[in-house]
Image 1 (cartoon, rainbow, N blue to C red):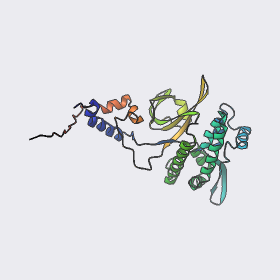
Image 2: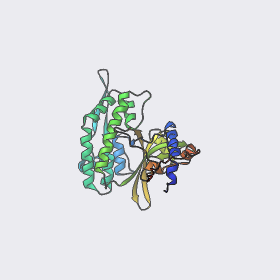
Image 3: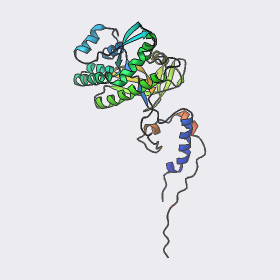
Image 4: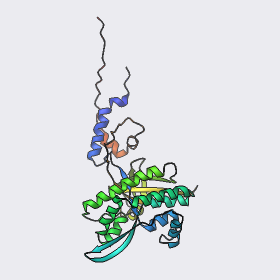
Length: 293
C-alpha cells in the first residue's frame, strides 16, 4: 500500500490552519466590495481621468439606461431638514465600465439590476439608517468610512446589501466582466507601500497612498478590493475600493488542505509557513486484513 506524503502530514497541516484562525486569518471570511457609491465614482468608471463631477457624462449614462437615478436621502435633525444627498448601488460602476467597453446590452442589463436592488427593502432600510446620521457622517459611510462606535444596524444593513450585490454581480456579469477583481486584507504597512493578502491569489503590493485614499484603509487588517480595468495593451486603470467582511450566511465550506482547486490552499505565504512549522505527526492507518483458516 502506498500512502501519499501529504496525507502523512495531515494532522500537522490542520493544526497549522487552526493556528492561522486564532491569528485572525479566518479561512471562511467572505470579502465584498463596498456596496454603495457616489455619482462621481460612477462617472469615473465611465470616463477615467475626466472630471468626476461631470454632469454631461452622467446624463449620457442615464440617457442610455446605463445608470440608475439612485436613492435620495433626506437627513433631519429633529424636525428640521439637515441635508440631502443621493446614494447609488455600486453595480452602477459595473454598468458604466461595460458601456465604456462597448458591451451596451450588458450595461443596460446590469443597470436594470441595480435599479431593482435600489428598490428593495434591504436597500431602503440602509437608506433609512443613513438618514438618521449627520449628513457628513452618512456621506463618509457611502465613501467607505465607518464612524467610531457605529450603530450595529448600520454594519448589518451594509453587509446585507453587499451580499445581495455580490449575488447579482455573479449572475449578471458572468462571462462579461471587463475587469479583474481582487479582494483581500492589508498584511503589512511600510513607508511607501502596503502588502495585501487577497482571498483568491498571491500577495499584492500597493502604493500606500492608494490604500490611504480608499477611505483610509492603509492599516494592518484593513479590507480592500482592487479593480484592474484594461484600457489598452499597455495601460490600465486600478481602482482601490473599500471592502467589508460579509461573513457566511450558510454552512461554512470545509477546508481541505489537499484540494488544489481551493484558493486558500494555494495562497500560503512566508508568514503562514512560519506558523505551520513544527514536527509532523505520523498518521496511523488501519488496514483490514482477511485471515483465511
